[in-house]
Every structure is written in structure tokens, then in C-alpha cells.
Amino acid sequence: MGKAFRIGLFLKIFLLSSAVSLISLVGGYWLLEKEMVRRVTLILKNESRLVLDQLAHAVAIPVLGDDQLTINDLLRTFSLQNGVKEIFVRGKDGKLLGDSLNARNPEILKTLPSLRQGDKIFFHHFNDLNYALASKTVFFGKVPIGTISIVFSDKPYRTIRKEILSSFLVLGMAGLILSLGGAFLLSRFLTRPIKTLHQATESLMGGDYSIQLVPSSRDELGDLTEGFNQMVKELHHKELLQNALIRYVSHDMAERIILNPDLIHLGGIRQEVVVLFADIRDFTRLSNILSPEQTVAILNEYYGSLIRVILDFQGSVNNIMGDGFMAVFGIPEFLPEHPRVALECALALREEVRICSKNRMERGLPVADFGIGVHAGDGIVGNIGSGMRMEYTVVGQTVNVASRLEALAQPSEILVSQDLSSRVKHLFSFSEGYPIPIKGLDKEVHVCRLIGKK
Image (spheres, rainbow, N blue to C red):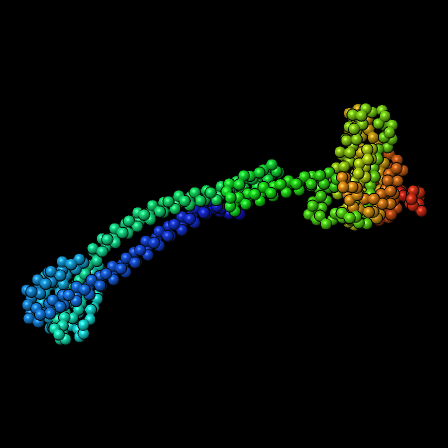
């Protein structure tokens, strides 16, 4: 499917502004033309009435006496008035008594009205000739004795109208050019900051949080720019929090916590968790024979690999205690698969230790081995500490049991409480269980070794 045709905002604003300007010019021209035609028609009618009234009074006696010479003299005099094209006078019997031009225009003559009763003026318009014909009955006293017809031409007014419309077009075109220029500048003014915001958004999507835009105006666009700057700050702050959180929990868990902050119980809550402890065996002897730099290097190399494994299994590294660490599965929310995931993580940790030790031996470096203890049970989850230093962690007997199992584990051994192994015995292989005493508990805890997956 092809890419949809796209019209830029600049072009849209420019075209819209140009269309409005052009429509205004054409509409103004059309309205002016109609108004001028209306006014010219009105003027022609008014002048026709005036000339007809004067001429009817002047020719009444000559018409009655059939004095054609006097009639024609009067017609030539009145025909000099502006807009008068031709004047006809007919007698009572319809005979043509006078014609100002002696043109005998057949097109006009056949439209001349017959003698009508009553003092009325009749108008007739010739579309093809652009003339207006006005007729009036001539009375002597109250007796109709003939008719007068005057042909008016709108040529003088059309000349004036043409000049006015030409001036309007010149001014209108100048206004159109100015409006198009204004539309262009307005489009640039509106789209430039929006384009800048678009480019800044793309940079932000690429992870650049150093963007700070300067508002180009003190209006809604300026407010939008300020809002964008504030959004960048908040997103940067959120990114820093997420990066810090990912150092302790998996990326998926960090996103869940950020999207659902209610999962973090600030006041503390009792819930089920799976706790895993891992510790380097015989670390005291190892640290005595290694330099401080070598000691830190071996810890960082092992921890770099092991912590990555824990995060891959959606666990959280809750505490690092020198030569050991504690990982928790099930915070801030415990899920039914966490017991299985915790033991799969323990097996993956043992394999990662083996691989890391092999690589170090190939480089002639000292190696370490870990003992691991895993236990599931209720714990107190919440923020523990003071106003100066807080830590979201787990405390309680479950943590103590897991720590005790880790202390009893031999190198590369994973000790699991029977409470945990009984839940997943269909998925993993375990050794025979045996009881061990736990300080603070009235009864012994049965433990077994994790051998592997079935």
C-alpha cells in the first residue's frame, strides 16, 4: 500500500489564506458589479421620468397641431441630455410625428407602445443593444393625444462603471498580492516553531534530554514551547528513575512499577516472596591472598554476570553484602510462577558461575565459587530506613531462613526449603530432604539440594 499523500501545514495555511483572499476579491467584484448595475438602472429610470415629463409638457401643443418641425426641434434639444440616444413622438393615430435622429430604427420602432389611457410610464430593456426604452402618454388637458418614447443608452455610465471596476481590480490585485505575502509570512510564522518542536520531538525520541527550546512568541505557541520544555524535564527525570530502578529490578518489572506506582507499598505490607541468597565460599581466605584491586575486580566480574542473570529472570537485587547478595522474586507483586522462576534463576546462576570461572582460569586469574540458598514464605515488604536513607526491601523470618540455607550450602550447591520444593517438585529434581535447625524458629526446617530441571 502506497504512502498516503501528505500536505504540509505551511502549504495548508498558505492555500487557505490565499483562497480566502481570492474569494474576497472575486466576491467583492461581483457585489460591486451588481450594485453598480442596480444604481445605473435606477438612475436611467429616474432621468427617463424627468425627461419624459418635461418633454410631454413641451410637445403637447405641437402634437395637437401636428407641427412636426417644432416637434423635431424640441426632440433634438432634449436629445442632447446625457444618456439620451433617440426620441420618438407619435400621434393619437400611431403616426410617427418626430424622430430626433431620423434613424427610423426598426428594432426599436416595432417595440414602441400604442396610445394608452392614463398618465403612465412604461419601460422596456433591450439586452442586445444595452438600451432602455421609456414611453409616456402625452395629454392635452385630460385627453390623450400621442406618445413619447425615449431610448436611453447606459454607455456613459458603463464608461464610469468600467473605470470604477478597473480601479477596484487594481486595488484588489494589490490587496491580493499583499494578502498572499501576508499569508506566506503568517504560514512561516506559525509553522516555524511547530517544525522546531517536531525536530525537537524526534531528538527526544532518540534519547536526547538536553533539549531546551526558546519560546519564539508570547502567545499559545510560546505556551506550547514552555510545555514541551517542562515535558522534557519530566521525561528526563522519569528516565533517570527508571535507569536507577533497573539497577535493582528487571526492565519489565521497572516498567510495571513506573506504570503502576501503587504496587510500591510505602507503609509496608505482608506478602509472599521468594528470597535467594548467594555468597562466595571461603572469601576471607581469597581476599587475604589477593590485592585490593584484584579483590574488587573478581567481585565486579562475577557480580556483573550474576546480577544480569537475576534481572533476566525478573528478580530484584535487593542487597549486596560484600561477598554475597540477596535477590527477591515477588516484589512488588507476587505471581504464581515466581517459585519456578526463582529456581530456574538459581540454576542459571550456578551455570553462569561455572562459565565465568572457566573464562578466568583460561586467563590465569583466580576464581571463586558460590553457595546458594532459596526459600519461599511470607515477608514484610516496604520502605525501611530513615529520612536520609530508605531502601525498598524484605524483612522477616523468610529472609533469615534463606540466609541460613545459603550459609550451609557447599560450593556450587543450591539448598532449597521443603516449603518451596514441594510446589515445583513436578518440574525440578531434588535430593532427599533433611532437617536443619534455624535460630529463632521453634521447629526445624527441612531442606534439600536442587539438582536440576526434569
